[in-house]
View 1 (cartoon, rainbow, N blue to C red):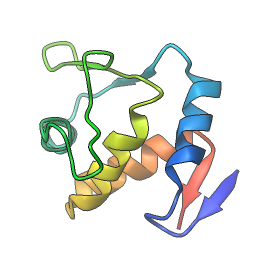
View 2 (tube, rainbow, N blue to C red):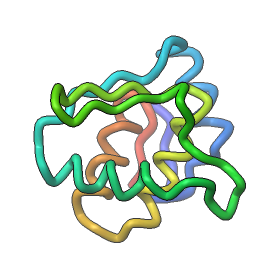
View 3 (tube, rainbow, N blue to C red):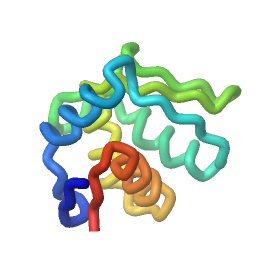
Length: 105
C-alpha cells in the first residue's frame, strides 16, 4: 500500500493505479444520498481550473446507483472531492483511494 499525506497523492499515481486495476473504468455502487450529493457536486463542475472534466467516457446513474469512472478521469473526480470540504466527499475520496491500495493519512 502506498501512503501519502491527505490530499497529496499525485495525479499520475492515481492514474497508474486506476489503469492497472480497472482499465475498463472504476466501478462504484452508491446507495447513500449523501454520497450521491458529494458525487454530483464534484461531477457537475464542468471544465475545472486544470482544464479537465469528467466526460462521456464516465457515467453515473442515480436510479441504479451505478457509477463508472474512466481510469484517465478518476484523478479529476478525486481532486474535486478533495476541494469539497464536506465529510461525505472526504470519506468517498479516502474510500476510493483505499480500493486502489493508496492510503491518505
